[in-house]
Picture 1: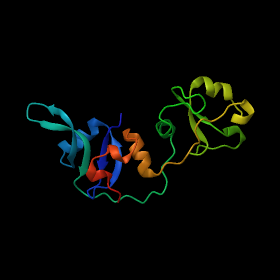
Picture 2 (picture 1 turned 120 degrees about the vertical axis):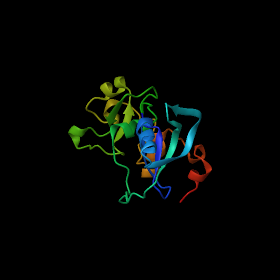
Picture 3 (picture 1 turned 180 degrees about the vertical axis):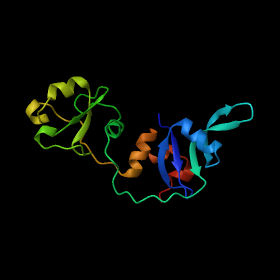
Picture 4 (picture 1 turned 120 degrees about the horizontal axis):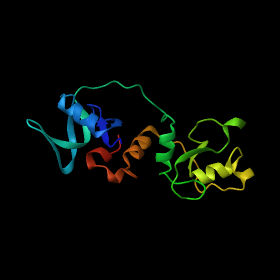
Length: 167
């Protein structure tokens, strides 16, 4: 589970990592805890570290500019909040609106989250051919939106004030 936000030394969001990886980065003095889970700490014989929610790297990491969020099955499920685009129930699979066998690709605009039943019912057809209607239109998230979705934050208001400010 990825639930720790990693910021660059300049406070730019970079990615999300597991709690274990975040603690390792803090213990190796490669990162500092910017925000911790309230009241939770990791304690050992000679260690007492707050459980990190947001960490900031101590050294600046140069990252090439990314205009688009990379497509992934996990990303589609997170974008659609694990809800089936056809019936609204819990989604566990990814469906291609335009089937791959008919030229549809693995893109943000051609894939939606779907429950197994609806994915099988639609099969190798378009939604119109299967007599099914999309409840939501697929969209392409920005890299920043994809990062927020991965953290489970629905909107910028759920972030700390110092992080919610637009750049």
